[in-house]
Image (cartoon, rainbow, N blue to C red; front, side, top):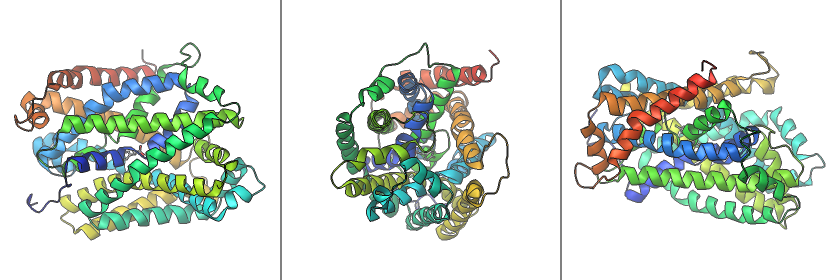
Length: 446
Ligand code: PFF
């Protein structure tokens, strides 16, 4: 593949925006509150914070280094640095497939909520929000919206990285931030909101803390930062040579954290105020958020604005894992962008249909009510991404020489790279040991 022909993202800000666009999405706004709700609230949040710094940022930096150095897709990137390590790239490709198998579905839920807010049917119905969600889950519209979301992603990807991805990221992020702040202020005035702050901000380690909490929090850190799956390798392959990789990874992580914490500050007070359960599960935000809007003047308008922003945030994330697969098919099989995009979209649709078997009332896997949706979600965040992350650490600091990471962190001596010793040490010892320890501990071996 000729490197000259490869596209690149515009300026420094663009690199941060597109990487943050990938990171910030359903992971912070939908998955984080529901995981925190199921795993002890504040205790989970604290561990998650720690994981972002000790695990997420170093791994992201490692992936950036591989991507920008090689300017290739995940498989090609690892292979060109060390032939025997190409499997690590394949791990990412499989992870991207698994994520595709359910993420579009949740993104489709936002489409449904956007339209039903816009038409007002969400707020005029006599059914509770919980019942409305359950009814929607069993309807063909869920399939239609999933398909629409894949199509939307497809159309952006087909236009290529610079035009599609950059533009989408630039508009959505500031707007999303503003509406979350408005919602956080609004919920503070809801009766009974205090219970939510107590749950989300005051850790109770004695009651709600276990190896599972750390295991889930690490998974959430990987998922929300889009690391451990070759996504940041692929994106960094489009970064410019003067981009400061350390600064970019720090900014992306901080922005993601901010959105996740804001989402928690919106959801939990509302959950407690409405008398719902924080451990509601995957439907949490879809039954809780309408509770916030329902008594506001112009409920439908606020609600539509929120859901359109959620759709955009999800879109900048779907684009990123779609691109992991598209870049792989395109470069590894020498296909045109159009063909590679088509294969990826068709594959995503097939996997989503597998997850959506519940709509057709077909039960394939009857193991304790586990669906493909749950399997895809659990396996990506808790197994594939941590394994990908662990081996990225080992690759960057044991397989490669220190000069590899140093050169990428300092842009070949142009930047000072003061954080290099700290990050090198963390990537070489702390992050891998932590991941291994948690894995082993969660399996109950120690
Ligand atoms: N980080 C995204 C989110 O939080 O919604 C999800 C994601 C995107 C995970 C891309 C992995 C990935 F490669």
